[in-house]
Amino acid sequence: MKIRNYKLDALKMCLIISVIFGHIPLLAGFIDLHLPSNYDLLTMHAMKGIYAFHMPLFVLISGYFTRRQPLRAQFKKSLRLLRLFIVFQVIDILIRHVFMGGGTFSLGRWLYPCFALWYLLCLFYWRILLSVIPQKWNPKWIVVISIFISISVGFTNISGILGLHRFFSFMPYFMIGHYYGVNILQYADYKQFTPPPHRKILVISSFFVLMGLASLNPHWLDCIIQPYGSLKVFVIRIAYLCYSLLLCYLLVCIFNFKHDWNENAVSRYGRDTLFFYLLHPYILYPMTILIGGAGKIINIFDSCLITVFTVAILLLMEKIRIIHSFIK
Image (cartoon, rainbow, N blue to C red; front, side):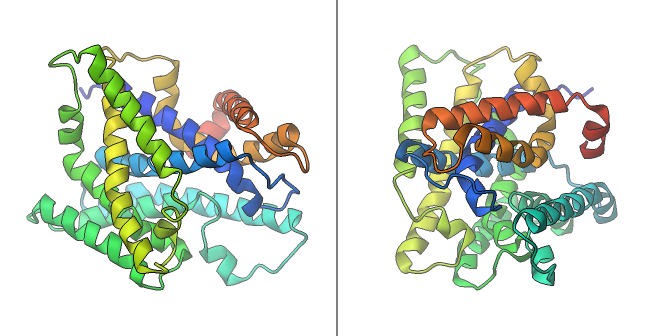
């Protein structure tokens, strides 16, 4: 009988909360609802810091939980991701069409994933790729090749069509999670010894200091989703890959400080983070309008309040069986 990893469930729930918080400043670029486009400096820096680790760690955990299967079985299992993508892509495009005053339903609009839906396509690609890779290949070389591809894609003109740019950019995290996730968790596991208080303080402070430093760089986010504009951005891309992996490891270490992870409210809801991931934009829009208001500068308190109310509403929606069963 497989033992449930409540620690990772709790970690996933914390990550999805950080995703919701980090998406608040991006709303104005997603749909024109006269949302406030001004955010205080602290909110913007917090968003950049969160983006330094939250999706890399999400992808890494996805790789850890993905089992290698024959291609046909993997494809059949992963079709659910395509189904969800098509449904929510249609919903998002219709919302854009209604609230942005019309526009044509061109082919390009359908081929570019709306908002956060790129993750569904990329997870589908990564799972299929995992089944295609020969089993006899050395995992170390698979990770090295994925890193090389991830860094090299910035020299091409691959756009966000069908999520391809992010598929290549985040590929190393998935491969590292799949092939070395067990090793990472074991190495970060403090069950074998109890770290002294000063070591815990060092790990926690290092995480927040590094996250703060990441928020000061104006270019690192562009290097993931856009072609390199200069050699400087290329160097930042390499640094970001190492930097984000270090932040992921430190966060896993922090969650390992608690030895006896049992099922609780956080870990229980952390099982179904895809539910929160897909539905949070539709709650986030009205909450931002309601709390932010037109023309108001959203500060860090407003952002936290929007996040809390959004999570609370999603927790209530999670109890609606028909919605939950469709996504699950």
